[in-house]
Amino acid sequence: MTTPIAAIQAYAQTQGVAPADPLRQPLPQARRNALAYQAIWNRDLPDIARRQDIQVGRLRLRLFDAVPAGQTNRPVLVYFHGGGFALNSLDTHERLLRLLAIRSGVAVLALGYSLAPEVRFPGQVQEALETLSWLRRNGSAHGLDGTNVAIGGDSAGANLALAATLSCRDIGLTLPRFGVLLYGMFSADLQTASHRAYGGGAHGLTSQRVDWFWSQYLADPAQRANPLAAPLHADLHGLPPQLVIGAGQDCLLDDSLKLAKKLEKAGVPTTLSVYDDAPHSFMQMTSLLDQAVQAVDQAAQAVSRALSSPFRQAAE
View (cartoon, rainbow, N blue to C red):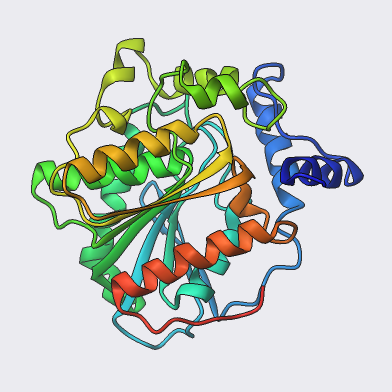
């Protein structure tokens, strides 16, 4: 039986692309290769009523909505893409972002945050908070309800979503109503069982690459214990309900398992779902993997329920 990671690797090979390897390539080349690799998962995009780029100072935002412009008070999922803080962009996640908007019935506002090492922690957390502040102040001009907000992301983006939520709690800003954390990079601990099992290279993302991502994001190794840089170290009390989705064949799986356990211990309503044979970043591959479609639907329906938006089922 073909495994998801084998199917992904085989398809990528037929397209003449491979994942970026920033440990062996100059960073500009690795970023170009990441864009080329991700492009194969973003073909034949589903139609969407509204796709709008919004520039707010240094913030590069992209709005997706299955409802045409003109409607008001649209609930919003604020989303941060993955890529270890050093790779990827709004473009690499285009299909996923469209599907989340279509399937949830809410608007999706994605941030193309500054990449490391050109900008390091806490710059990305500050940009996330600026996005939430802009949405509260100016969302209505775009038909958005800045008070009816969920927040989410994948991998490094899940880290950023959780760090922004923690920051809102700690500085007294209005909390998002819900969190969607997809196979997040929540800790710099590389000695977990999942790193030992899946971090060697046969399952996509490697432990060595995760370590390199942390070195790009943080200027000082001591920051690996900072709760806003590595939210698994944070006090999680007082957070809104969270959906944590893990990939079963991912070196970061234990980050999700440990986070869900700690959230529950802190009294945060938490749903943990692990897609057993899925690799890291699998939800971007809905054109190939049934598990990806199922996980996107799960996340979209959870956001829809949390923000009380009519759920819209649609074909890919």
